[in-house]
Image (cartoon, rainbow, N blue to C red; front, side, top):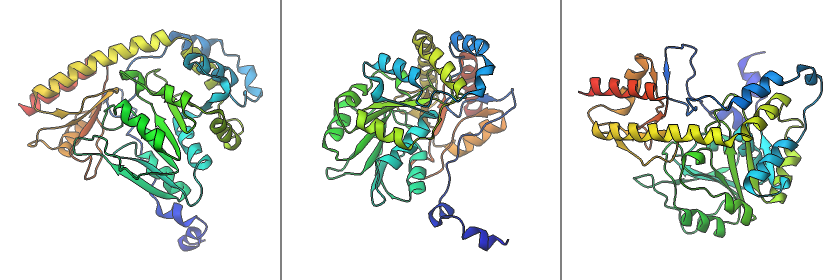
Length: 353
């Protein structure tokens, strides 16, 4: 069958769209990997213990279809009912289900520009209109007064800019929005504030969290959201029958039962973040105030973001570079271990001097 005939079998919108491009992964152990916002420290020892004790004979059975024990533990952590919790295969599944549950075919999906680059891809998959909201010159929030969409992805703290939006602005937007507002709090444990109470008090608000960042479980793929039970029920109707495997449920529960370990790791990351921010400032970088486990920074004009990204990569240090008018002058640096960050700082001082 020729290429033309094959292309006619693919949905026109899918054939025309561009897919999501994840950060570069490498198997080279010598590489210093500061490009995908992974936690540099291991998860709770309880996760390893749960893995060792897992009975593989159980794998002949289907897993719990709703992740009931996880729902109950998450509800306990956030002071709500299990019926207000949805658990998914990473927060990306949560986001995708929202586009299917809350957006009609003639509906609209909104998000900030710049923000998580998966959002426009999800809108394109649904083949619905996109209404991005451009952030200000300093990546501040400037929401038009008459703005309204079926579903808005509000990343807070934002990625890739690392900034926390003002609580009053978030609440005011949620209050006047006629659609669903999904507050994506993937990085919230590294921040000084959160909006979980809005999910528990407003019918149109969902708050999404992930175990990928602060809980050091990016390889496990576990995300969840909290909100009005009717919204959660809608998502439950359209999810995959068994969207969470048995091993994931056991290990995620072990991690959620050791929140103290997560918080200790977070404090280590935040301390390193402050040291890196100070060093970058000394070298003439202009960084946004970070409330995440990464720093969004503009190198000195004489260096250039893309050139710096390529030079670092050539020397085995991966950071993230996003092409584009709004993002092309910056790089995003994940906070690694103290040793990794010191190596980066040393490299920058040597090259920039």
